[in-house]
Image (tube, rainbow, N blue to C red; front, side, top):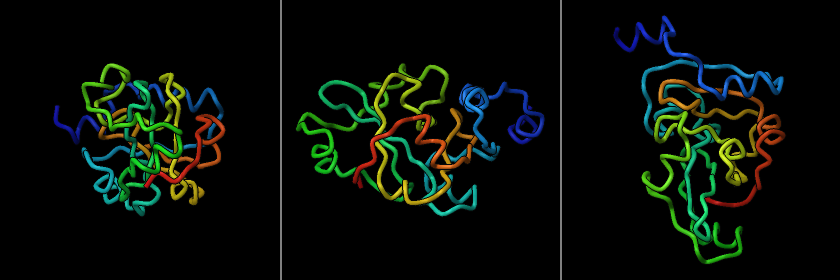
Length: 163
């Protein structure tokens, strides 16, 4: 069965993040779309500004994985990250560093809920400026949109300047 038919028929079970949000009584919407592998492409497919799309980047801080959430058009500023975490032992993670940490997600399609994967979450201040947030839902074809306030309540992120 082709991708379009699979999207329309919704053969795959919903990603676990949907169940979690329902259990937490969060109002959210799920969007299914053609595969989008970059955050900027995801913003285009969803017809939303890139500043609303949470791009998840994994970093290694003092040999521990941490989750960074940035607006789609931004890049991680490692000096700002070092200042935020108060260490100089910081680097961006490679896929092989973190792929196993997200067994229920396609690589690169992790939702910004590091708390569900036992890792701290850092959110760029620019992303916190919007009332809504859009992010991948464990697949490159599924997206969730929800209130940023609900995301903050559930993920308990540290808001900092990361871009």
